[in-house]
Length: 124
Image 1: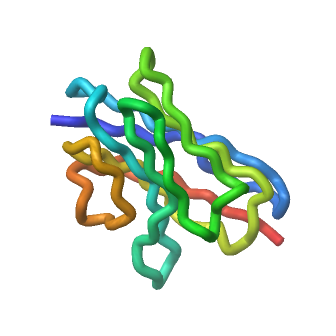
Image 2: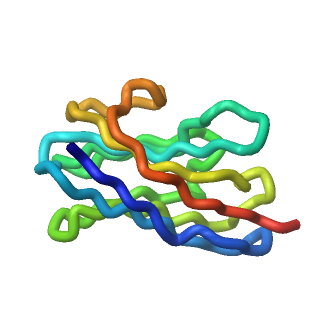
């Protein structure tokens, strides 16, 4: 069983920054992949970014490319999503997800475990 705990959400003005964290426990992570997704009210869950744990290879949605950075800390079994130049359209609940293979994916149902989510609100 994998447990994921997100933190770091909050309220920020447009143009500001936040860093989300996702602490993972319950299984070795050296061969797996993780992702960040978000869901705004009335909208479907949307892919944000993914990372392959073994080598740190990342993949981003076009809407966040160049503004968000996905990184990992092997020693802490923690991943981070650094979000810069935030826009009101980034407002959503952000979820960390874990996939039991080392292949990164932008499809939410490819992921096996999910955190509880953390709210990010960007004011204009």
